[in-house]
Image (tube, rainbow, N blue to C red):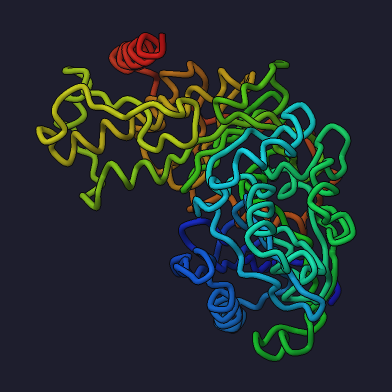
Length: 465
């Protein structure tokens, strides 16, 4: 394969949905997309992801999209807090645990005795299996023979590149995603890896943009792609959203990647000491640099509040929410985010809400939750919103009012993850941080929005005293 690569196939696996897309690198847009839900099997032995079903979908989708658009290269991006355990034959040593399984909580006290400090890993202590190290500890304790069966530990995006190419690798954006397994400051595995007995079982660490191999013959035959199709190492999905901005924007700025998780990543801001009790952490970007970050389960919270109702914006509903200060206070999902352990409550009886009022109030709630992130991470400059929330005008307007910063929502794409993953095949070094992108200003924050934001914040602060 010679010449410039234009059409990149991207395997994009989020916690809620699985997607295969074709990205046109010249136009920087998705020209073909196929999706399906990300199903979790209940067990035995525990809730786990249906990776074989995922693989069948990926292969079928690549076959279809290649026939329509012609795929010249492949990249991968996935959610974090996940890894795959392989045996010596390259098959599963154990099923891939769903990080929302509460099994690791049963041994939390034991795990806390061996996990490294936040100063070493930048990983806050999280519930369930949200720390990959906690997953591994629980799996090893629950299955005494597992350590002997494990030959290789793979970060999740690199499991898919292994399926495509047969090459084993790990990568820093996934290792740095609150796993407890990585030391961002030292750019190496943390002490926990040795304590778990996994030092010799971790795959070699490569860069996100490294071209690690070409398709296995059987994969080429099944997908219809050329056997010499190049495959890059791949990266964590929030860092995929961040990557295009690292290439083209001059710091300081922050990127808010939205989906099941809302993750705000601060680039070039003030030096702050992150508070791990508020779900702040140190991510690692595609270049290996530490990135102060904060997060909460915004997409999950939206679904829990809307409860399947129509997500429609109506002027009447928005007007009443602002006029009567109808507010939702944290935390809808209390196991993560800046207000962990708080119990969600409404300022009026929930049953009195119309669908339009509910939609406006939860949109404002999510914006206010997001507005906490720059305060905790030292973020400065404009805010760029990626993903589904970029289409929510109420969210964007309130976020701009609450942060008093320009909020920019790129148009024309549903999510930034696939674009960022595809750009690993772009011109990485020549454009990094060399261009300042003109920011589109949203609606000028109205006084009633600023007043609403101030009242929400004052009420929440008072409840924490």
